[in-house]
Length: 305
Image (cartoon, rainbow, N blue to C red; front, side, top):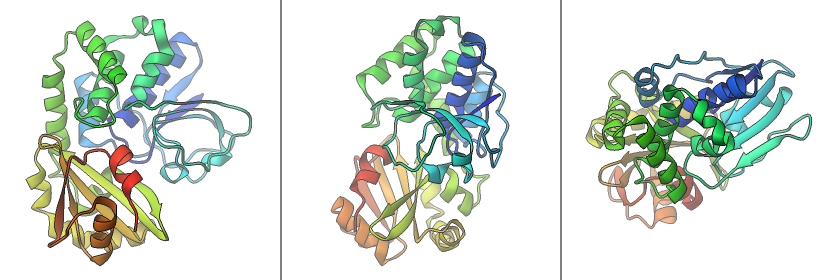
């Protein structure tokens, strides 16, 4: 049985893409496969699962030696189980920057394309066989694209992502704005999460100069709800960093509607990084970054000291 999974902080794309590809392998290729998660899905992903009547995949922490796996929506070993290179990697399907560090036992299929969403890549790979997919699979594919493009607001959006989403929505009879509004509302409800959980919810490990960073992004239509907790969030950063082996946690609160990000500035290191990376003048414990919405395209490539 092939296990298919994304990264440790499952958003909608990293939750949905394993489900989509498991359907394709099982139903079209007649190859036994199972979608799994490496952590609890975020609130938006959980809503999407319920909206389309899909079962939440089981959550695991580690994989067994030589176990056949397919990795989706990441190629970064830091976002995967520590034993990943002991498994038998069969394929990687991703849309992020190439990081390096994964090792396969044999030549494998690697599909990495400059698109906004892994589900868009899967749409193309599945091709005409997608006509055989049930509405829930097509709906999950649409939801992944709406999530990763922030309803086409994100600069990562391509014309192809939009065209695929529009075609899926038309076939399903779905109003994309209405669906996205519900998804973003679910994503914005953070009341059940501790500060540490919020800092880890949608985060990636990255190194700038000699500093190991946990780069957290919270996308929301209600940024004030997050910013009301800025003091406790900043107080939680050193503990989260220490537990995760990082030097600093960066938290960007992305306002989906205003199309800007607010960076929390707990110390001089983050203030200097904001200045060096974005040309921002920091005068308090937050700084607004107009037009910044994408970690992949605008934040990580810009970070420097």
